[in-house]
Image 1 (spheres, helix red, strand yellow):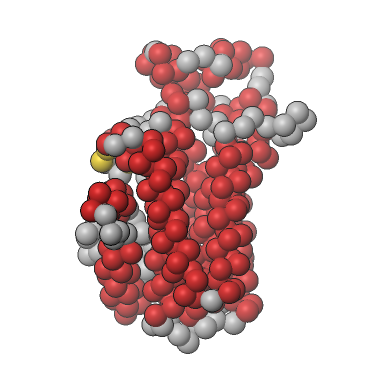
Image 2 (tube, rainbow, N blue to C red):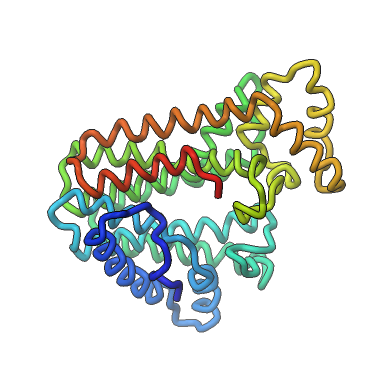
Length: 335
């Protein structure tokens, strides 16, 4: 079981709030271990694989934090909702790794590498089924929200495999993919917390909008870090997306605003950067000096500000402070 005593995935500075969240997160962790159990030992092993590998548990933590805006933050429904979003997230990772042919996830062999694609896909399906069972316990409204979330998430995954349609802006296509793959589940996490924590409709709507924006912005900041990060500081390997040919916002903006002096950069971006470390290093150097990087950073800053603007619906206090601080982290993160 992951160590819940480590730093929380959200910047909570109020000691009492932090203690409540840690205690509730420990309950979620225990419940998750039960929800991945199957009648068959092998299925339990496969379904527990990524859960046991750890993770920040950002989505369930956001459910718990958002629930603090209502008068039922300690309800069992809040814990159930937190499990729903994490199981949905875990299931999507199994499918993602098959699509990306990934070999490693969270420092461990991916399920498809350890077993095979069939096991990974069906294990993801099993986890989606478990999340659906739990959602049914929360009532018809939660079922509708979860169905809409799942549909949007899958749309994003499918769209990621397809090139933009003729005449479609590649940047807008990329942002739409991110909104589906990442933003929607974070938005639902915030919404579930508010809804089952007993918050007002106004607060529920504000937190849903906040989650949608800040979730997508967090993914875009990953796009930027893939190019700009110092691996020794961030712990990330720079250029991973470039090597894999994954389009990211800085790259798409560089292509959109290509100048005559960018001919070499475009040539490199059109090549197989996995074949040459020298070419990859050159592409990183040219991208880091390109105005597209500042444009991408400005976009994330603007999105973080937009997300924070929705928080005016929340009363002032440690919950709002934590959510505002997280938006600031997204805008300026280096790891």
